[in-house]
Length: 198
Ligand SMILES: [Zn+2]
Ligand SMILES: [Zn+2]
Image (cartoon, rainbow, N blue to C red):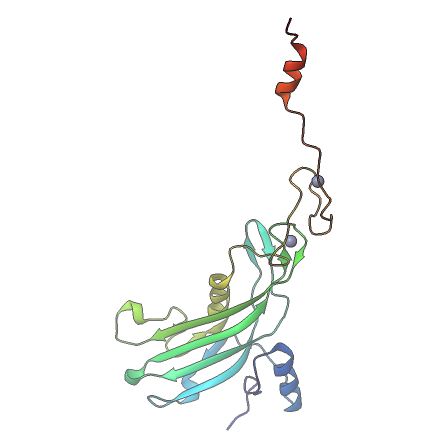
């Protein structure tokens, strides 16, 4: 059996997988397209693969975000269904980098991703994966879309980021709890002060 770069073993941790791959003398390489047919799975059989993907930069809320790791380790479970189909599960954790949506400082949240696809040739369109062309899996496109669908509503530098002061724009994470401003004088008081009741 051929030892491909995706068969390093061990958990899908960035470092663990890289170390395991190094021990086996394997240089991790990214997989964009993966030919499931090459696995020669019989009906009902399954395989777990550890592969590496790269994920393109993306724009969100007018800001650019990236996944700096060139090689994101992913775990791909492939099951051959009866009737020549595939049931697929993709899992990985992507370290995203970009501006915090509250305070604009650098945010590097780790986003867990899990996605499933089923493809059953000859069935309705619902059972056709957009990422499978014949038996060739578009792992690059699937990983990108799966991450996009797993993103939280706000990408933050920390879950309880205090954001910016609405008055002066100071970063409230570092400004200290004393940070505050005298309330602006209510313009109505100025008017009142001009009036003199006899
Ligand atoms: Zn923040
Ligand atoms: Zn302020």
